[in-house]
Length: 147
Length: 147
Length: 147
Length: 147
Image (cartoon, rainbow over all chains, first blue to last red; front, side):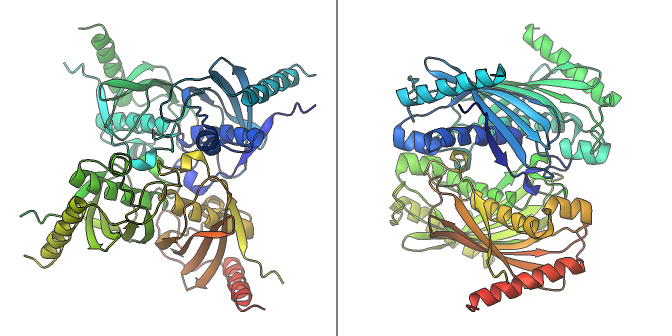
């Protein structure tokens, strides 16, 4: 059984940093979003682009909350652990924890709704997506419980 | 007495939007940060660049939390209302409410600490900054109380 | 007669700058593009978003060339002068010159084609757009000739 | 002998795309810059951040010129081939060719100067950097000549 939490690696660069010599605050949500998109890509074979254009599944964000624990710099790759934490009738929550060199850089909670593209009307997710997400939530709970 | 809440206007463009034809989620925190920086600029005569390089006052973010209420598009300017909501010994909290055409697009709470540049060691803010922020918090509270 | 070259003002911020304390190179083409979109908005009443979605006129870029003359910082607003320089059967060229505090920061030449949205098939521009662009090219030539 | 041209792979995402469903023009120079920084990182063990902060070697851009050949989308990774093409007394030129699924997406020429950080005064590069760049220019010329 694969209880491993999905990890997405980001190359932090010079252009991500501000004159304080750390990644600009505005880039950190961008990194978290990239990691969530990579989670979808890993599990479905395509990211938000393919989900929206090929499958008609949009997942607009309705909430994000982040705590910044330690500055991000280009000295190490940023390793973003991503896992879904909750699946509602038409919503999904993700947790992202980002590390550099073993230290927690930031952590965040994100909520999306499933929605019809362009119209943005809420809709339940397709069954295969529901199945994948539920399995990953269970795996995450198991991993957290040390099983 | 000026109880008006500071407002910063942002031109949302084509490049801010994704294939769902709305501003990309990752841009929304960027917009809020720009509005907070504009608040500093309005009240101090310079933004984060001048605060950090000329005055030795850094204000790294430790938290942000946003709720996305209505999609942002290039059809209207984004009007961001910004006000400080709390000033601690070494921290400051801001509230940002962003509107397009009279509709709330998103709202967010942000917490920064005052810190020595580069070292990022926490430090109390200079007295003039403390005075400005306290006055604006009072004005905001008065405005909220309808006075 | 309005021979004035269109000018678009950009607020350069902390987040635009890198650890060298100047605007990151990658942001400079972004600024030029924003200025070109603002040119369209000024002359047509809507930017690329409205042109593409409401009028069915796309203008993808096929070329850009920039020379960076002087570093851009948040100390001054960036004033971007934009003018069309050439209109072909299905293409349009723009020149952008960006100044801070009277000094040339960068200059660039940009070429777009008129194209059907999504398909990206080249197509001549609508007559009203052709008329507006031709008038602005003439005005620019006159201004350059000191008339 | 390693005559292979350095290649840097970029994950193009949803947030890189605009409503035309292709990567926004302003992102393409960003991708090329990331690829050039990755070239430095590969050859020196650190990117622009380490070069500037640890070694005192800045390389600000003075010119860029790009031709956009085919739209970039999230359907394939963007493979950026990077090679230095010229080394002057205080300048260096790079060529970047970016491909998706075997098709040329865009190509560009970039010129940087070696400069003292913050002051931005031109200066010749350190000997080890000169040696690495000269070797890579020779390798590129050999590769081009089919040797």
